[in-house]
Length: 161
Image 1: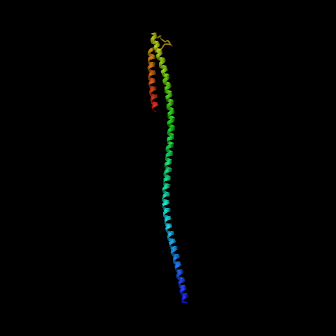
Image 2: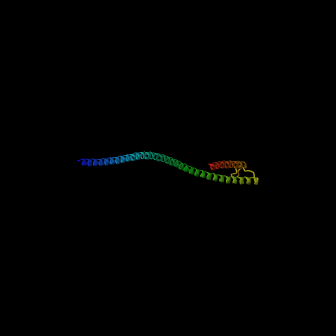
């Protein structure tokens, strides 16, 4: 019976040691799992912070993109306005050049008529529809020259714009 009790004692001690070993393994495994869980939670926190930063950057970039788009739209409108104004100025310059050329021709005709009158030395006939007094031609010539100067200044100002 003593042998039986000793055998039973040994068996129980062996089982106890197995349970203790198993308990130690499970404790170590639980500790390891707890450490892994804590590490995962820490990583999740870091990832969440990074996600927030990325979302903020994305929002800033979207706002910047919208601002750039608005600026580009404004620039495009300005360019259209400049192109339209340039076309108007070109048209005005062409019109002024045409007027200058017409006045130059009128000036030339008036000068020729004045030279013809002075070279022939004829006296003016009163009431003659064909004859124009030299003083009127001189006045006409001055008026043409003033108009030409005025148009030339306007043309130069237009070209400067």
